[in-house]
Length: 226
Ligand code: ADP
Ligand code: ADP
Image (cartoon, rainbow, N blue to C red; front, top):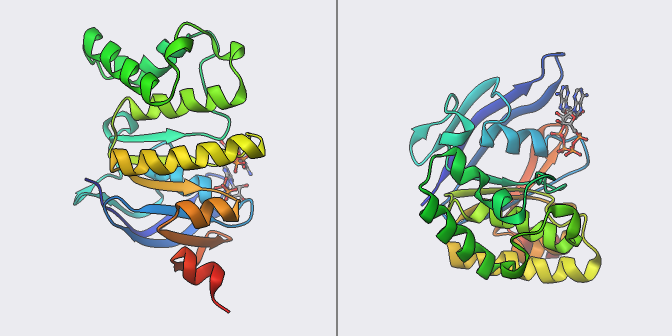
């Protein structure tokens, strides 16, 4: 269960640049929200504020009725998947996936069970002892997803998770993400430049420009209307 409420959120970076201006959005439980818009329009900044990786300059972030502005990232029950995967190169696949659970002091046997289950879902069972450099791009992407799902978070934030994959893998991972969304019943906010991804995955699409929301609509309305 996770509904999000972003109320009048603004981000002013220390150099004075206003990256996000008066952002208002209500996200319902289990929605799959897509952020689109040109490079620099504030998509990543908004995701990072939701994850707690970037301070909110003003406004309120409310998740399931609770004000989150000052809650530490590790206490937010949110997992983020990055475009570059951000795997730890010196750690094995297992340890990469276990890292967030260790940080939260989850018991060892529970960590093992959760990592193995995620590995099964993502077809990584035979790769758990490898280091990231011995994986293909698609496999690395799966590890990044695995690291997110082991925590069974309420909210997934995905910042162009497929943009570094070739076209064929992108199509495959797209349908895997779609079935993960159904299976996990999570609320997802997903940044992409790819219209097909936006159309096939999104329940609603948020169009951003220069830190401002220009439009919020269903994929059908946004892309198909004459
Ligand atoms: P997007 O993800 O849509 O490409 P970002 O959220 O990364 O956009 O960036 C929004 C704007 O904020 C850009 O103009 C970017 O240059 C600027 N920006 C991002 N991070 C910082 C920062 N730490 N300091 C100043 N400006 C920043
Ligand atoms: P993305 O491609 O995901 O939008 P960027 O390449 O814009 O990311 O930014 C990468 C990193 O550089 C981020 O951590 C962001 O905060 C920082 N950054 C981006 N623009 C600026 C800026 N104008 N000044 C300072 N830091 C910035």
